[in-house]
Structure formats: C-alpha cells, structure tokens
Image (cartoon, rainbow, N blue to C red; front, top):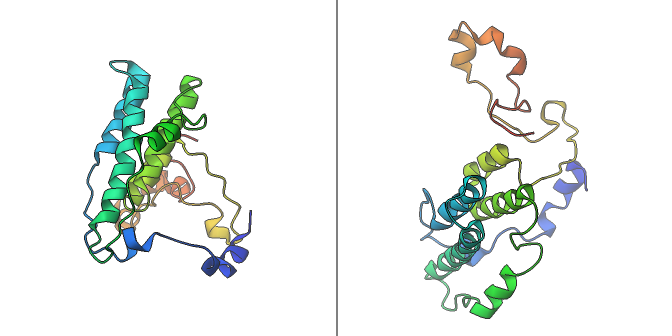
Length: 189
C-alpha cells in the first residue's frame, strides 16, 4: 500500500521477470490465442450456459497455461538447463488447493476462471489482460490514488483520438465522458 512516489523510489529492489523465459529469450512466439485461453473461455461458457463441465475446462486451462510457460522457458537456447516440468502429483496437489479449486457460488467460480485467464495472459498479452479485466471486473485489483490529478486511477478506456475530437460533429455530446477513468458501456464496475 505504498503511494506512487514510494513505489518509484523502491522500484529497483524487486524482481521483475524470469530473464531466462522472457528477457533473454529471442524465440518467444507471437500469440494470437492460446489453448489455455480457449479452455478458460469454454469453462466460463459452460458455467454460464451449460454444454459441458466447467471444472474440467478450468483445470485443463490451468494445466495448459503451466505447460505453455514451461515451453517458453525451454525455447531459450541460451540456457542449457531449463526448468523441469512439475510432476503429475505436484499439479494435482496444486489444482486441489482450496483457493484455486473451482468451488463456491457461480459468481465465485466466474471470478476464479477470469482471474486465471487474466494471469495466463500475463504481460505477453497485456492488452488482452487489460480488456479481460475491464470485461469481467476480475481480478479485483485495488489501486491507491495517484497524486497526479489527471491520472488518479489506472485508465479504464482509451480516449477518442484527436481527429475524432476535431472532425466528428457528434463529439460534443460525449466530451464530458471522454476521460480515461470513465467506463465504456460494456464494462463492469
């Protein structure tokens, strides 16, 4: 719960990324959609509308996400000793953890699915992660108010580009709502 100024002073004191997997890996692929994302989307759809077992798709999505990030680690030819894959018993124990297991109310299950999907996107698909957060409202992230008046909170949307402001005759009707912290009509609060 540090203010922005204290966060910036202490920025260099924390680990940022796994350098073998991300920073020094020239073989990171471009990602359009991963199998884990598809499984998480199916889990959400099955939970909302039926047609399959949401827990099976959720667990498959977590396994696929883990496999994907270990795969990225193994792509780096610079490192000769990639991280070993977790054992089946380790994965089963991980998936049975009460905080991770797909149990609870429908809303709690949706939160778990959306949070895992968001975590899977990571920074490799940061725009998708941001969109997922705005679409579902999960994970519930708490941000301290920034001391800069124009950026008190993280942005919730992109503002209209300058040519829309200049040339769109209907812009005046939305000028007051064209702020980065106003929600788009489809966003959750």
